Length: 141
Ligand code: HEC
Image 1 (tube, rainbow, N blue to C red):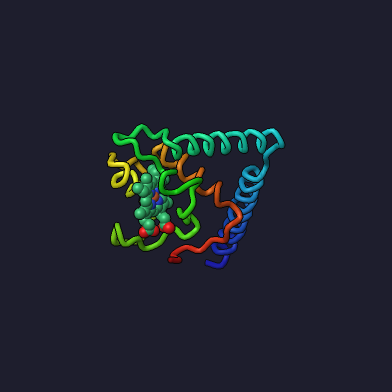
Image 2 (cartoon, rainbow, N blue to C red; image 1 turned 135 degrees about the vertical axis):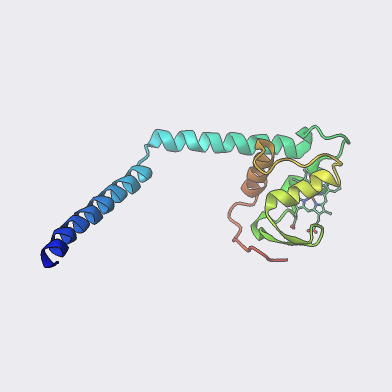
């Protein structure tokens, strides 16, 4: 019994070490990126913000001619930093995208966008970009 245990213990220890080393290496790989990566990622981000800017200022192609900026000039009063929060119109705690859909369905009288629709992501990117630097305040009214 004793010999069997001592044979298992080093094997278990070796396995633990292998898992730790591999896990650590994986983490290192994830953190490695070049200056070119950063430049490219920033360009991709800004291109999505710019797309959101266009959509926000009348580019959504909704059925009526109402655009977001008529009620929220340059994302004013959109308070993205307060999401998720309880929204009376929807009767539950919602994410920013769900609240944007409420505006798309009501003032804009159009169909809601899927939460992973690139247009909805672009609108959120634009709104959040306009409010960058504002402290997070999830749930605040
Ligand atoms: C006719 C006016 C009108 C238009 C157009 C409009 N909204 Fe709104 N929006 C509102 C009202 C009213 C509310 C509700 C305010 C509240 O209860 O916080 C609101 C709330 C919001 C909120 C949440 C604000 C908060 O403080 O929680 C976001 C985000 C938002 N709108 C984004 C948009 C976007 C994006 C568009 C365009 C797709 C849009 N809105 C178009 C009137 C409008």
